[in-house]
Length: 605
Image 1 (cartoon, one colour):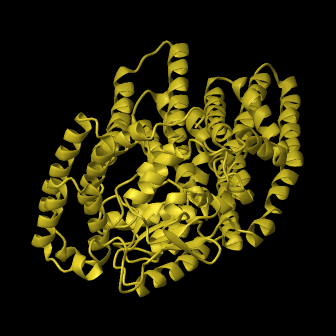
Image 2 (cartoon, rainbow, N blue to C red):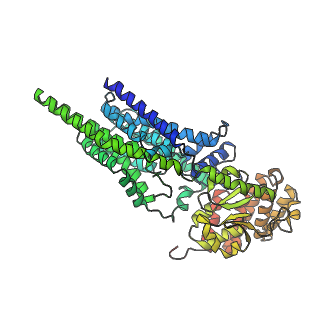
Image 3 (cartoon, rainbow, N blue to C red):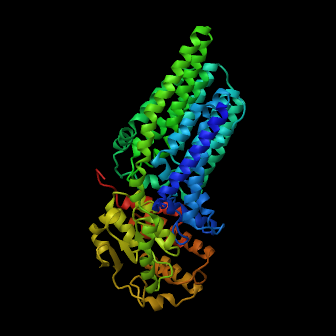
């Protein structure tokens, strides 16, 4: 009877959470559209670029979620609806998995306390809003739950290595996946040490899964992006958010639930090995995710980094109640006279959890109208803004406009034919690696551009201080800027005028680029590339093999100039080689290393 009642409560929690998500109806956030844009480019054959014309830069930190969202392209599904629904489905599926932590660890049937985790999540407006947002929150919660179920089962049985699969996928879903993996590994080692049992083959299987998934992605990252860390890491190095305040605010808002969870961990640790496993794993996962949030903070509201951890609060409560029941069973075993006191303790504890927890969960639900009225930066809002930018670029005759704007998601989904310089740095190697080094940033934007349209406000407001750059633009309103001299008939970047620059065929262009390199006129070659790439169809540009040969030639010329100590001309040749090779990441890495030498950081930058 208790098992069936528990199953009903878990199903009711899933239903309640689905209803809460439907009530909130939050639109997908602009950051989710970044993953969609990358996924669409990948599945359309353009590689891992935010748009097919942009350079290959890892402007995302959730490769698994990016690929899953990209499937909306071959499936011909509306990308925003698909992202919204997929996140909710994973978030709902996580609830019964969290409810299984106790039964799997203790090798028993589900009991009433196991419904705590699903109901804590089902009544959390934070959890519901973020699994609905198009972000990877639902998938992260699902993989956390699955990793817990598999780890607890494999610790108990000593058989199987699927934990490595779940943890590996978690690492491909969020950067802090490595922290959860370390926490799980720590619990594994302590548990095996206490048991004095070492399951070598099982440990090897888990390690091989991690090596295959995480090591495989690191290899792809190095080959394709020429780095071992995502570009977002470099872009956000100087971003300052109050991480400690971020965590403290959550603890203050959900104080009662957090207190119940803390008590649950203590009771679980005292309730025997099986309950201690569950309580320890939940606590370690909470600490790992909390530490990441403490170190990072976030500009978005509603605790995005903590949302996947919400069900773990219920897991802790369940572990505590299960530990108390285990102690009560031990007490009853000492004699019949202890039966009713033992039952009384369990009943009082259960009623106490309901008395304290239900109002706390009710308060969490009542935050929903406020979240519904003020959703986080919607993708639709940003997309509408960039439809005007796209229309302006089309009126100027730009087939592949070079634009410099922040708000990458909606921008990339609307301007699919543009080459995007993400002035926030997330999807631009140079801007991320030179963050805070203004002379290097300005040199990059001027010499490898300039963009035809530019945003200089908010996260890109510092660009207004770049005098050489801004002298080439005229304002279009308060925050948009257009390249001076750019019309539908002329482009100041075209050597000899637009008509003359666009006249040669692909073979003629190849000869002109070779001439620019041989004559040491890399700056002219850079302008020529910007001109022809903006207007000519792909079929009228030099083919890939020809451009790669030209890039090699430009790089050789640059290396010779660098050896002679002529660093600025060498830098221009490296830049030309990079652009001709469609932004090859390894060429970009060498280019920006030299730019850092030409424009070294000043102390304090």
